[in-house]
Image 1 (cartoon, rainbow, N blue to C red):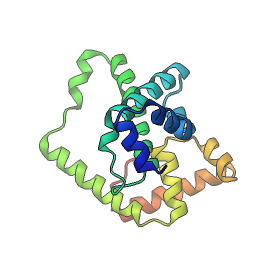
Image 2 (image 1 turned 180 degrees about the vertical axis):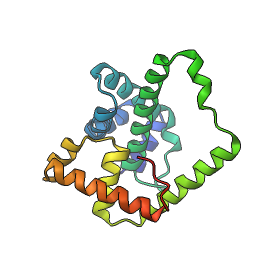
Image 3 (image 1 turned 90 degrees about the vertical axis):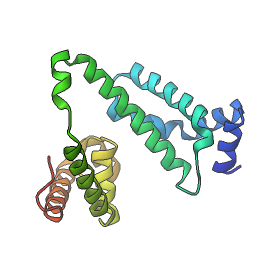
Length: 177
């Protein structure tokens, strides 16, 4: 059974298909959650939330737009970041919550910068793009990246530094550290 059929079965209410999907992709989802959510209980709750979202949104999966792996990666990452943001906001005093409002013009400028950054990242060589995503999308630590790539931490830090410098140059100095 392929990914499209699995998602169709889940959308049709097949719990066994959901369990099979979670067995297959559970390690990937947990791998994504680990660096973002440090508390094991938060990771388990987030995993349960992701399972529910898969169940509820299975009909929305379109294999023409991307792979199931990519869909689950984005879903997992966003769920983890939302949970982490929610924890930080609950720790923030109420008087600070209104200080981060953005005007329509600021929001438009942020979207334009984000779009330019995506284009520049898409043009990077595969190894540099992988390094970028590991650090800034999957929130992996330098030590974890070094271990998985077979490099020293210093080598990873050096590559990240050169990557940031290159991005800064290509974006005209608009990259915030």
